[in-house]
Image 1: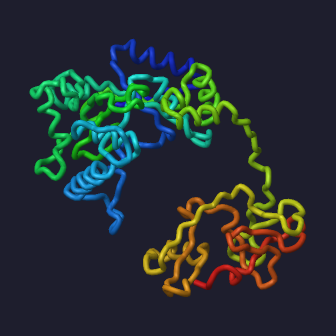
Image 2 (image 1 turned 180 degrees about the horizontal axis):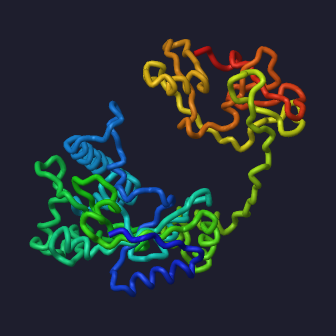
Length: 400
């Protein structure tokens, strides 16, 4: 039951919204998302078949889950003093150290969830905190308004039995239950206690919890933090003692907190280091070109802040159609053939939707721009205002 989202403009706003939700009779868990666009899907279910790039079939997913659990349990004991006592504890430890599982982390502390929402967000996009009523979820899924720790030795066999369908012994037969269910962990890790951790473990239905909640009529709320409020809220949380050392009570967490306390804020304006703009090319009559905004001195590095990562695609893996998709590779990619393995590869942006100004440079035999071995562009001579920038493609790329 997904209701219209709430918008947070300050820490006070957030506290008032949470108090209002809890005052309406909901018993809530919270989960922070660095991006408001992320879905409530466990990490394991975001995987795709590496050979077909399609969603894995249920059997493949089950086999991968068992294999991951087996590998982690076999190798982890040599790397830590933590000794999980049962399959549930193993699964919780895996989740907290970033292994792909069917668990989603939640917390009983709304401010900790808010901290996770803004923690790594640099204010480039909206963050979000989700609020779930786990007791109503379990009443709908297992028929009881309860949330238990299935891995706790003190929990009776009778109480644990309904939850075994979500986590079988490794490589045992049996299907997962269909819907997600809410569970408590044992406090096997200090982090689990500090973060007031709790979990949903997901079953055969791989949709996001927001879609499942609508079908099951389960209360689920989304609280959005606009991008421009991320940093002020982060500072407010720090003032109230919610920081890296609070959430990760170890030396690594303390180090992160100390670094944050001593960071100097940098307010770089979007136009700083920008020398070019796009326009109608004079070299390619039917295309786009790159033009100087002002006079550029010889040797100037042209696309400061571009931060453009590239991915190399084997020529044999390029799409055969449609033609306009293939043309993106031919028009924009850097093409190289390895002398040893004789394979031709195309260097492309991580996604063609991320093309920056630098990818629109046109080629010329009399260029005013050069390219170094790391694919950084620089001015070969002084470039006048409104002059089109060109580079010789042949100096760093083969012809398509």
